[in-house]
Image (tube, protein in one colour):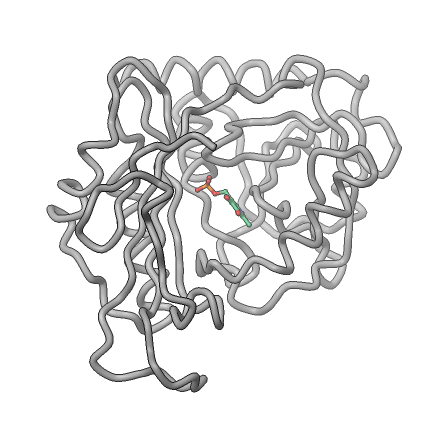
Length: 280
Ligand SMILES: Cc1ncc(COP(=O)(O)O)c(C=O)c1O
């Protein structure tokens, strides 16, 4: 195992020396939240937006932010490498409580963990990927980036077992998001994505794409997408910080469009890559 340096509660130390108590509420209850922030050539991508979502997630689980924005920037700085594209994973749990009790413990410091990985470009971008649909069995607070990911894991695993890259989740007849991604559909020439709500994680990539689309005269819609409409989409994409914009060319074994990444995807992917470079 690569013995990279990680951050744990104030210390930078080799991964194999980073230890957390078995009484940590992250381990016992999944009681914590996380963030994943891309860093391109040493520049954190939309750092303020990720910090805002981190604050929203912490508010959502009623855990005070253990650090100011300046402190977070200082903690992450040693991980950044101008020669690499990386993503920073950071996690905050409700800390180590000596009594196992569902209710919050008092006067317990949060556990803060940070690690960093090199971004491996997603294979399959140029030919597109396959996806399945599944009834969304997760909870009602999907807007919180909670470490409690069992629902998402089971959905993604089902997709993988069926030779697919992602599971698209259906909630009461509407397409909401992927197991670890947001979803976009091109329907009647309009780039559609579901609105922000407690049914989806408000993806940073999603917001960037919507913003770039508007600036480039691509018509967008943030309305709910009935599954019946998604089925007649000419393009479907999933988006996330780690995989960026991935075209889906087959859904539930049915071809999307002509079975190759569509024109709008090509246009948006070019715009997105140009935008990333413009920030360096
Ligand atoms: C459930 C879910 N939705 C959406 C996203 C995309 O969010 P972002 O673009 O901020 O990575 C993720 C990312 O991991 C996710 O897990």
